[in-house]
View (cartoon, rainbow, N blue to C red):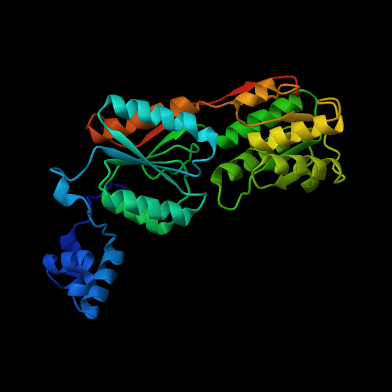
Length: 339
C-alpha cells in the first residue's frame, strides 16, 4: 500500500532491472540461472529484489494469466483439529467457484509464515488467507507489493492487512470472565497458551483483565499462567493454581485441551467440579460436552469464518467488491455443569 493506504500494483521484474541497472533478461538469468551471471551482478540483483519486494513468478510459463485459481492458506498447526472446520468452510466455497486451496503450516512461527507467504506468491496464488494477524515486516512488504488480496481470520484485529473475518478474542474472553463473575466466583484464575508469538492469547489475556477490572475484583498474579499446549499442561496448570496460594474458586482455560487436562486431573484426584473449583474453556471442542461434568465454554463460528473468508476473498478477486472489509461473526457462551 502507498502512504495514503491504497493498494499498489504488483512489483515487476522491470523495477528490479531499473534499480540494479541491468536488463530484465539479466534479472531473469540471475534469478533462474545464477551461475550464468557474475557474482557482482548476482549481488546487485539480489539487493534490488530485497529493496523493491519482488517475488519471482515460478509459474509464468504455464499460465495464460498472471494469477492462478489457487488460494493460499497459512494456519499455525495442521495437527490442531480446531482449524479443521475453518479449512472445510474455505474449501467448500472455493470448490463451488472453481478455485482450489493450498495449505501451509507455520508452526506458530512468524518466520515460517513469511516463508509460506513467499512460496505462495511465487506460485502466483489468486489470494491469501492467513490465520495469524501478526506478521514479519518482510511478509507485510511482500503482500502489499504483490497486490494480492488477503483475508486474516484468527481474530478481529483493528488493523488488518486488507480484509478480516473473525470474532474478537478479547471480547470473548471478557464475556466468559464476566459470566463467571455473575455466577458468584470471585477468585477467577486464567490459563492461556504462551503470549509471545500468539496475538489471540494476548487478546484473551487482555479480555480477562478487562473483565476483572470491570467487576472490581483484585488482579492477583498468582491466578494467571501461560502454559504450553497439551493435556499434561492443563493438569499442571490446575495443580500450580490450586497449590500456589491464590485459592481460585474458578479457572478459565483459554485453550480447550488445557481445560480437558484440568478436568481429567480433577477426576483422577476426586476433586468435585465445580464443588472444589469451577472450570471454563474457550472453544466448543466436541469432547467438552461429554466430560463429567460437561464443561462451560464458548461456541465460536469456525465453519462460518472459513466460508465468509472465502466469500469476501472471491468477491474481491472477481470484482464484485472493493475496499476494506471487516466481518464480526461473534460468539456464544454455552453454560454447562462445570461452573
